[in-house]
Length: 168
Ligand SMILES: C[S@@+](CC[C@H](N)C(=O)[O-])C[C@H]1O[C@@H](n2cnc3c(N)ncnc32)[C@H](O)[C@@H]1O
Image (cartoon, rainbow, N blue to C red; front, side, top):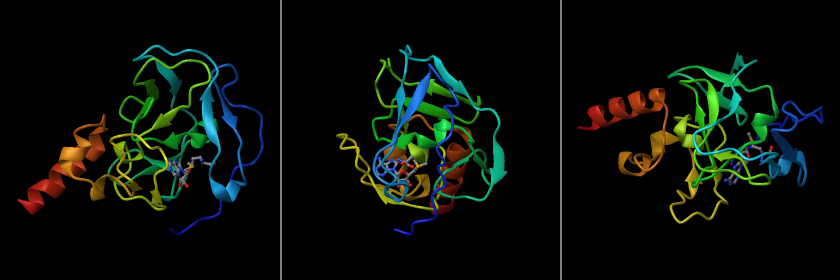
């Protein structure tokens, strides 16, 4: 796995009372996480995606269209991937939404291939979910059948349709 430099300065919480970072290990170990500081009912908005800046594809960026990547510039960057995610990174509606009822103290996670086509920094997944995809490399590397089990955004649906059409 190629590891890029991690930029995670200790700053004031960006969403106090909503969620917070739990820092673990060294920044280079990438094992910190984001925890809910309140309950979120299924379907509710956890955060609007605001203050984003365009940039290159990297471990911390989120893909927002077929060819654009942004930095979140908030504590949301600490959201880990899970194959049984608690949230949806909705780049169509520009919000993070609860995919299930989330309780205070639960980890906020999203399914990275739901937004990422071909990731800059792939990794082996630690989530342990029964439907774990094991290697998180981006939607490009997963079957349509697998992706159909997850909520995915429009640009990934479009890229998937193009891939499947080219292979037909
Ligand atoms: C944007 S960071 C998320 C916050 C990160 N945990 C940290 O401490 O900086 C993304 C990186 O976290 C790690 N990561 C996130 N979810 C993971 C998972 N389910 N399994 C293994 N590593 C994960 C990977 O190294 C990934 O490149």
